[in-house]
Length: 280
Image 1 (cartoon, rainbow, N blue to C red):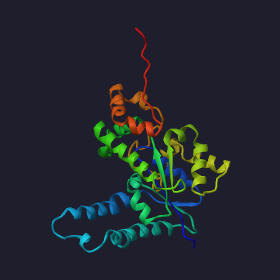
Image 2 (cartoon, one colour; image 1 turned 180 degrees about the horizontal axis):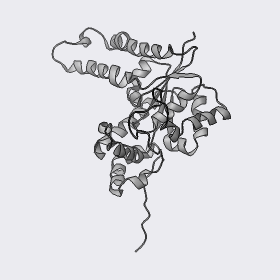
Image 3 (cartoon, rainbow, N blue to C red; image 1 turned 60 degrees about the vertical axis):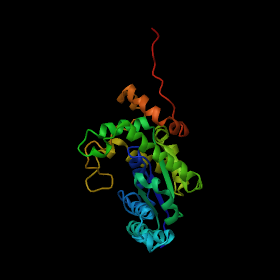
Image 4 (cartoon, helix red, strand yellow; image 1 turned 180 degrees about the vertical axis):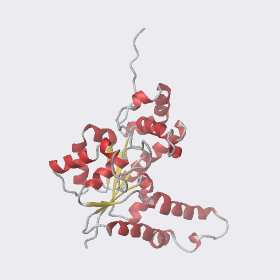
């Protein structure tokens, strides 16, 4: 079997990464699974602890035994590579291994070291829309992780943007791509086609239409239990409107998000909200 390529999807949670993942997973030449969190919950924290050990007075821990390169190559890399080999084993032929975990982009350095040929697709969404989604999710029993102050939320959103920009500073366009949720919603076929071509996946008008049709919000809400797209969490899939935040958020919330995120927003193509104010 030929060596399979790897495509990682990442982006701030509630930015549409699941939608993008499911569309790509519908392509016949990909093999995938649910989120593995292999970078953000497993090898990433291990690397963080390894780095922390340098601040300890005593030469304790694995940093006293392994150099940084040895630690990554002999301890961390096998965890990642074994995980992706297990995913690939589900396929009958060489396909692109597709994995989506929002935090993938936060660990771009480890990705570049462990999977130097992997492609990273970064999904960005207006922070006001993302916060509106967080706010709605916080009302659900499963949404404890979305209960953030605006300040904490903005810090998190900016960290994803910063990670993407850092990755862009050294990764080639063939290895790193950014797509905005708003662009995908406005012209799904066009931007999905661009992603498929970038990933060297075949595309056609018929295939694009089938993928888009199969992954509409109504379809995602009614998939069968036990399938990749089935979601047990109530109302996990929302309406998916690009600009619903204008109605969902208070003006004070919008302004605070803009105040904290405006520089990163502008870099990513987002502008301030200008509500109509009738003259008195």
